[in-house]
Image (cartoon, rainbow, N blue to C red; front, side, top):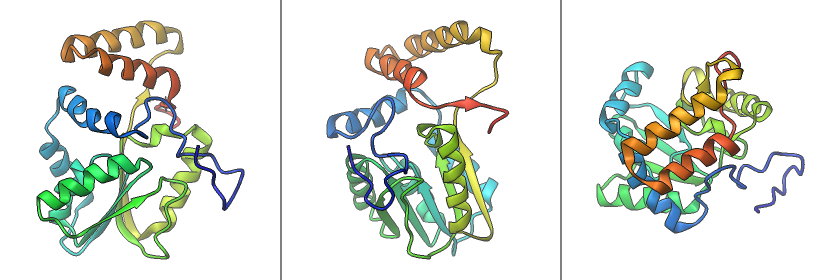
Length: 210
């Protein structure tokens, strides 16, 4: 467990809840498994670009950058991208991806929502793609306040994250249905187990709280 030396009461975001990517093999597996879940990464990047109104001179922070798929794609539309992640192994994969594509306008930062320090630099946009749910609700709010302080006036935040909208009495049926759908779609026992761990141990919240 990484100890935070600055403030001993701060939630330890490096001790990742749920399926951790703090070892190299799990980090490598995740990108392959994410592809099995479907969705067009390019379409997702274009959706974010249009939603935020990203311009060529903008600076963007991608918190929870993972293996760097989004950061590498959005970098061609920005002046600079900060790719931020709590897993050094994910950041190494992201660096390799950027190097292979000749991308030079990305800084890679080993940090999370609560520990990111840009040394008073400001961003035009912050993106958090499926990462905020790694924090309990109280610390989500602390994270959002910290993001507010790194955004320029008029800056924008884009969040894509799981949030529950069902009646609490239905949770067993809903979660069982979701796991069965992932199993049917991917035929990947490891990914199914990761999904179950995410439901059981991570911190997806209610839509009304979000």
